[in-house]
Image (cartoon, rainbow, N blue to C red; front, side):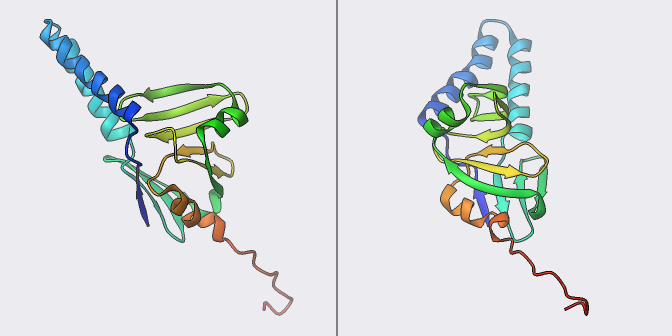
Length: 168
């Protein structure tokens, strides 16, 4: 099942529009090369940092960007849960973003005192934390977050009974 990155919140739209205006303004005041460099940086964010979607099947979760993708095997996934922004602040406290913030969302790392998250969010509601074994947890905002949480393969891993001596 494919879950696109959730639509941006109004705040993210306003920040994105303001940031997209900066290269135009820079070019308009005679700083064409600076504006062009910033526009190229924005393109890199769109192609490399902002995921298009999250895919979940019985074997893995895939994060897909326009120019790359990353597969996280079912065996690496521990749990997935929805968390509100208020609950996140209560549980993790103050957070510092390392990466992109405001341009189409927030992407990169999110450092909190207890944990460092990989972050791919486009809004402050519908947050999902995906815990992984031996890796940073993911903080993401897939569309249909409740459906996503129920689809994450780690929730359907059944314990297998031990084999007896005859291999059965």
